[in-house]
Image (cartoon, rainbow, N blue to C red):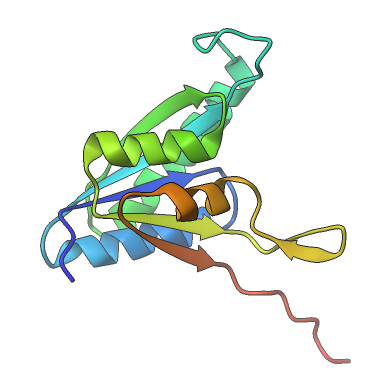
Length: 146
């Protein structure tokens, strides 16, 4: 199915590269737009436009890595750094504003209390996104046999 535009939220984690690669490959045939965003989650104690140096640097580094990944795929992307109270609603709002056809999200394999977890943003996006959502979970590290 051809997509006119694809949104890829990144968080600086290990699954970002695979999500950006996947979005670029899906976008190549119809020559779609690929938007990559990084959302800085702001504490409720701070104004939304407060300057957070270290978080901004982390976000810019994640977006730079996404640009390098897209360059390797020979694809041009648009990147944006956002500030919001919650990541999930910010992703859905951005998808609505940009009228994207697909959201591609990378998922690191994480456990919480001994159980695999999707975190908070992915379930929110799956429930509320107005378009298709593709989740790319990284592989589980398998211990080597002695």
